[in-house]
Amino acid sequence: MDSPSSLWKNGSFLKLWLAQLMANIGDQCYSFALLWYLLQATKSGTVLSLLAIPEMVAGLLFFLISGVLADRYSPRLLMVVAVLSRIAVVIVVGFLTVMGIEQFSYFLIAQFGLGLFSSLFQPARTVAIKSAVPVDQLGQANAILDTTMRTVRIIAPMTIGLVASFLPLSTLFFINAGSYLISVFFLQALRLSMTDHFPVKMTPRQYIRDITSGVQELKRNRTLLLVLLFGNMGFLIWQVTYTVGYPFLAERMQQGNGSILAILFGFYGIGNLLGSLYMTGTNSTRYLFLILIGWSFQACGSFLLMMGGSASWTAFLGAAVSGIGGPLIGIPTVTAIQMKASSNSTGKIFAINLLVLTFFSTLSSSLGALWMGKWPVEQLFLVSGLFLAAMSFAGFLIEKRKATEHHQSSSV
Image 1: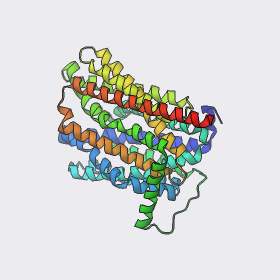
Image 2 (image 1 turned 45 degrees about the vertical axis):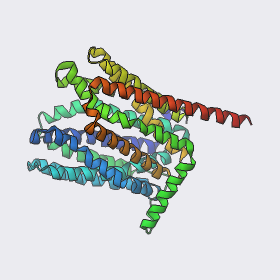
Image 3 (image 1 turned 60 degrees about the vertical axis):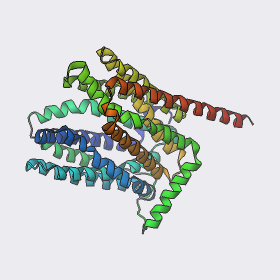
Image 4 (image 1 turned 90 degrees about the vertical axis):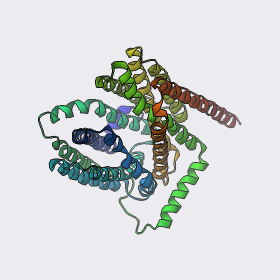
């Protein structure tokens, strides 16, 4: 079971992959349709920027609870419940658009619901992968799933745009519901090593005790703690750089030509895909080292983007270089959790990881709104590159010291 090709002979992994593929296609249909509908209805960039907030709030409120559920309940059943619930939300949003309802509060409530069920799905999927795939193939499995997601993000919008040109926009929401339903069929067919049962009773005290046990395990496992810290700390600067820096750079390059922004995002997506493909072929267990390499790519990309205002090719190259770093950060983080956390705490520690990620991303967006978003774009990319470079350098020093200590203990 060493080669990536053998993963495709694993029936459980194949069903998980097909389930994610259909869900990813549905996600793209929903995102395109909702953004376009609200843009036509409101003509407000502020409205569009608020769409992500309910999902973040739902994550902050429910990630830890979902992590407990993922460790106690059947991950297969949790994923099925989460996707069926998302189908209900998507159908409601579809009918809202059919009726021409433009009241923004309804869509914010729907976004909160989708965020809630996503927070239930993600820890359960992480636990399911750990159960379905041999230990030595976890990294490759995560890389294949990541590559699939990023490929769909690149290819799907063009197809969806073509469909939207001759069908009512509301049709995309029902296509989304249909793709989710197919995903449920594949999830329902999963046969994992874990039994499909629910605890008789879960009290608030049990939730608190389970969450506390996950935090205590993380405190004892210094390697995993460092992975979670360095895997997410860079988002303190990345989030504002991506959401503010890229649009303002595109405006600087072509006096507001939106096509330049699309090209920048496209090059970033290509870099993501290249990084995912690389991770598919590596079996390295130096998770912290890979994460730091990923942030180093992000730092180099920021420096190139800083010079992009005067040379377009430099900006496109910088976006692609930055994009390579994304999978080198995300995939080792998930794999390290699956490998280093105990079976009873995998879901909880993954949920803690999502909670930390959401915290840094939210803080970054707040800094952008209050302070950093007002900087000249060159200054923003410069500070981003310096921060990520300094963080990576500190991480490399820690990683080198840990490797030296491990070598010395092995020699003894």
